[in-house]
Image (cartoon, helix red, strand yellow):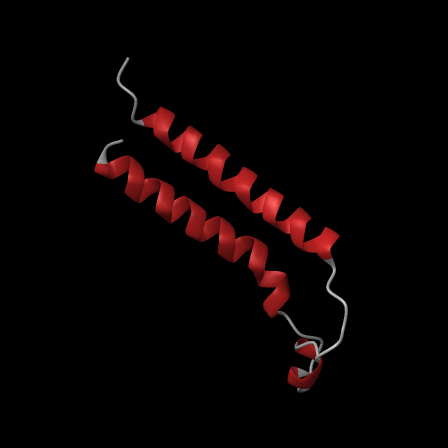
Length: 74
């Protein structure tokens, strides 16, 4: 992989991460920082964590493939 491809992939992934994480930073108003964190003993949503992980993995793999194809010599 060339350095340009690596840089372009990193930029693409960073922009995609910000785009998908933006709703998490949005708030309905007021200070709700106490509700943002779970307390000890609360169950984890393993299905949600796995779904987000799979989606982020697909975004990284597909974007790196697409960006890498841009710089491939034919």
